Amino acid sequence: MKFFALLRDITGVKETADFTATVLVELLEKLSEHYGKELTRWLFAPTDSVQEKQLSSDVIILVNGRAIEHLAGLATPLKEEDEVAIFPRLAGG
Image 1 (tube, one colour):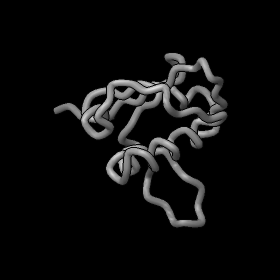
Image 2: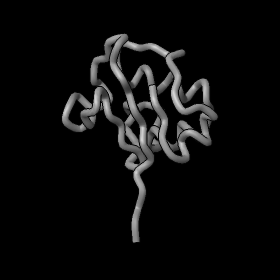
Image 3: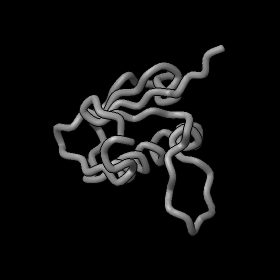
């Protein structure tokens, strides 16, 4: 699990292997629970409590170098050896 740019400031770490999950959304929920509301706001779009979690448009997530939009999104299955990288989406101008 690697964090980039300001997500490193929020988590206080460059990378961690302390969290495991079989599905990406489960991993992101564990990270949110551990690192708090600010990371949660970056990872998940606001939804009603009855709706499924949706990825925020503020981040780009890669699993083994492939964008999750080209995999199964939040339902992307994970193996223990998979590398997950989270980047903040930056706006230019």
